[in-house]
Length: 94
Length: 94
DNA sequence: ATAAATAAGTTTATAATATAAACCAAATTA
DNA sequence: TAATTTGGTTTATATTATAAACTTATTTAT
Image 1 (cartoon, helix red, strand yellow):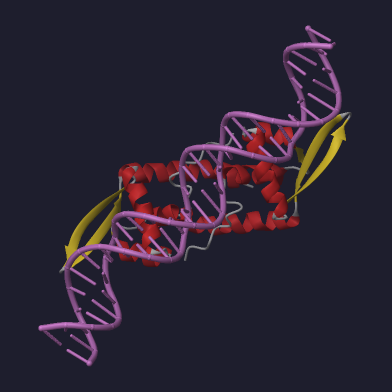
Image 2 (cartoon, helix red, strand yellow):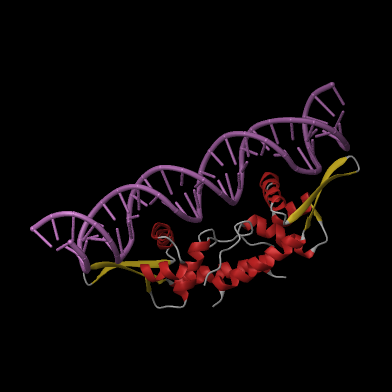
């Protein structure tokens, strides 16, 4: 009946990050930080978890002389997100 | 943009419990346990949290000589569940 | 009658999580 | 050149989720 919810996605901040990235080609650290209103530390940790899971790719480069971290959702991430939403529906359907 | 998700409901087991109770007038401990496939210990803890939050009421009685715990969702619980689902939609809408 | 198994939970210990605080290095501004 | 800002990372702490161990009483088997 209740399918297990992917613990990597069943997290307020990680889910918000994925939600932001789903709509976009890519997004940099600060944009995601603003959209999700997360602290930098928390965001850093959660991006890392998503990256390790292969749900997003993270590229560290520079914008002029300043560091710039760009994130992008992967096909595996999109799939995982869709599975999560599908499972979740079981829990929230009326 | 992203509304805060009620931490009491953003929990796999507690959400499943609420989901089960929403459809029913009431349900006893073991029925909920079977439906959610939770361990008794975990369920006991989570029911307690939901009860403390006022989202469910828990009545301890007897069925014959054996103890029987009956749970029921409260109006506050229904409201909280609806708010949670509403907030969640922001995160999962495509 | 007594021992073993079952029922219905609760309490406690542990592992995993989420989160913010503290920190760091480089660049910019005063 | 000192202070501030930018763009993060690392670390410490508090909270959670979860299962294991335990309790109390009942039922079943010997």
